[in-house]
Image 1: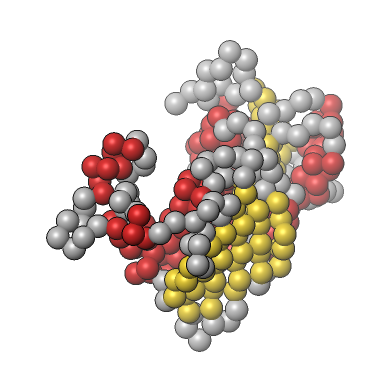
Image 2: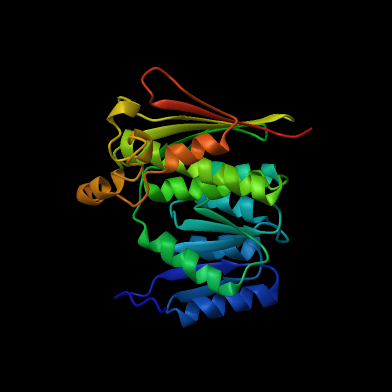
Length: 284
């Protein structure tokens, strides 16, 4: 699907691997983006300083200057394009530095070149919003403040999922499903999708446990008042919430809390129920 804005949006692709650089650049050109290529980090930084770009794709490990070093220079400069980090390096240190330096998204190599077009469309269609704030960026303790938007929630889920790459796929994806539901509830219901409000997220990892703590800025809720959710329905009418959600114009679903309870080893709410802790115990 081609991208046809009135003015072609400008994209820089920086990768020292010529084949990768060419493939991604060509896919983006075919989608009608104005693409400039850079052969390494120094070349990428020079081009960002000389011209305005809407989006930059950066490989991490490039000669002369790494993609993360380029990213830090971009953030300190006058021009602030959105930045996509792409690499086969999925170590927590690299991921967390990318988050701290405000990378928009992190793509793991190898990936099909067409994915670059999908990421570019998503990044450039999303308007600007307050940045994600990093409170802690240690491998065992990641803590963030994110604006109450679905886009920020989806991006942070992708980042955090990559931090747990050592877990079995089935376990990792079940945890991701539960985390996504809890985070979207916090953003949508607690934060009212107001980008000026923040949800606080902590991911704590030990050898025996993975814990998520999510605190939203809302006043809280009561399970008794959740007519739009499956958990608030009587046993003889378990899907009575579906019609109500349709009337309210909210996304399909309503099974999130029930599903999350089934996936968690422990799910704990504070008294106001605007803060939740999800715990999954890991095998030794």
